[in-house]
Length: 113
Length: 110
Image 1 (cartoon, each protein chain N blue to C red):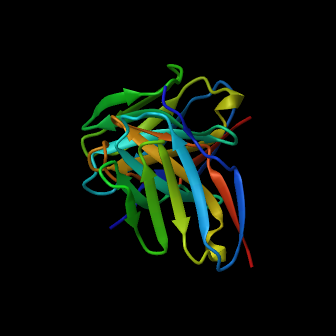
Image 2: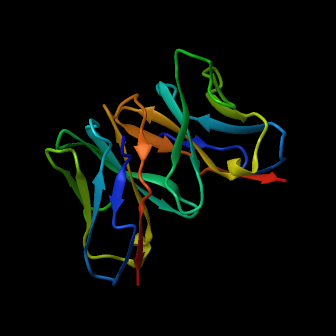
Image 3: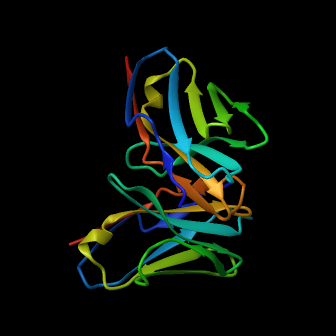
């Protein structure tokens, strides 16, 4: 069974640009969550999608958005990039999203210069 | 809001010894917990989970203990090996969201 796949693995963007990251969950999983990981901040929750609907959202500005497709694949978008957006972006997939095992992808390392 | 904290940011153990990593959580309504291991350059790897109707769960070389009275979670690793060196996170599930601690860095000394 394939794991969670995130693409691309690495990205370098310039301030002001926008970026789209992709996450393919484990087959059969319908919940996809996105997290930002930075040194000292740990994993911070961005949002969670289930069956194409955003069910939960963390405390990030509106520049961070996401969506989920009918095949459960998810994308997150960050517009007007800032230097502070440099981080490892992780997605996790689970069957239900609540009280079930959640498995992470390898992450996308975003560097904003 | 919820907060999940770790008592020790770093832990060093001798190879072969047992390791204990602790975690405190604040939301008494949380009913599902997971321990993750994250190696450098990789995403967090699921280790073991426990539900609030249990106080102990064992896996291969790992045991998770849950004390709901004091809202405390611990991960015990038996016979720690060099490959166990990593950052360990606990996560509590409330609703559709997981809350993570900042992590404990475990270093295994050969």
